[in-house]
Each structure stands twice: as structure tokens, then as C-alpha cells.
Image 1: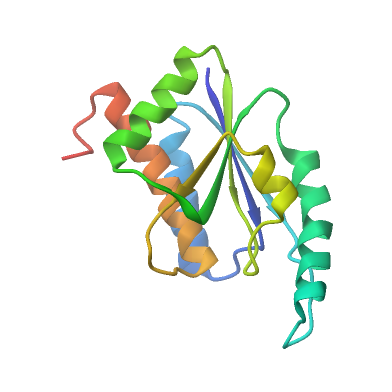
Image 2: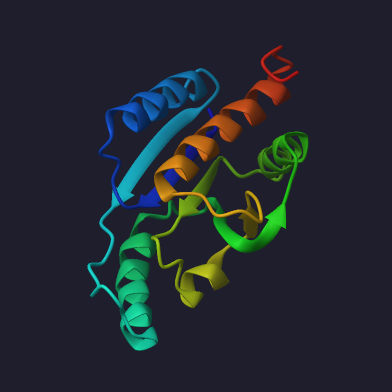
Length: 160
């Protein structure tokens, strides 16, 4: 069975986000194995300098790199990425499966972004929108879109 890993930097605390994430993980698990990995966000001062931000992102990078499954297709969520429709995301994941990959890994970075070294390792850079979303909401949106992509591939009526 295909495996999807979602790595997030930062933890969910609010019950409504936790409930929504659990619901979409449960739904998604009907189509594939799902792993959610939460990593701690590096603590930075209130007004960090660019050097402090880079240091924090590099610290997070080593944690992230250690959790990317070997051989997985690796996709990061970043504002400079490509925007896809739900159907296009479903096709992208379908193509990954056809390529012989047995797993995909998606990354939502910290509030300061993702280090350049991690960005350079990505097979694909995905943008959800030109708008900015809280990272907690982005996690729910990604889980829902992954569920939708699998439902589209399966011919489910979920996607209308």
C-alpha cells in the first residue's frame, strides 16, 4: 500500500485543529498508510535577525532530513512553489505511484520557512495559494487535499 508521510514543524494544540486533522488522517488511511511527524520549531527571539533565522532553519533542517523516508518522493509546501488544482495534485501523486515510488513525503516548515538545503532536496515545490495561512490551518488543508487527491484517483464522489 502507498505510504504518505506529512512532516510538520510545530505542534497542534487547539482541539478543533486536532479534531479536523484526526478526521482527515482517518479518511486518508482508507486509501494509504499515513504517518504524521511533528517536529519542534526552533525558539527564536521576538525580532530575530536574518542570521538567527537562518541558524534556526538550519537546526530544523537536520531534524527534517532525518525524518524524510528513504526513497520517498519529497514535496515541500512553499509560497514560491507551483499552484495545482485538486485534479492536478491527484494526477501528480498518481504519476509518482506509476514511477515506482511506494511513498511520498510532504513538508510544512516552520513559521520562518524552510532552509535552502531542504528546499534543494525537494522533488516538487507546491504552493497552496498566494495568500498566507496559519501553519496549523495549512496542515488541515494539506491533509484534506491529500484525501481529496486519493478520492479522485479512486473515482469517489467526494470530489465534485
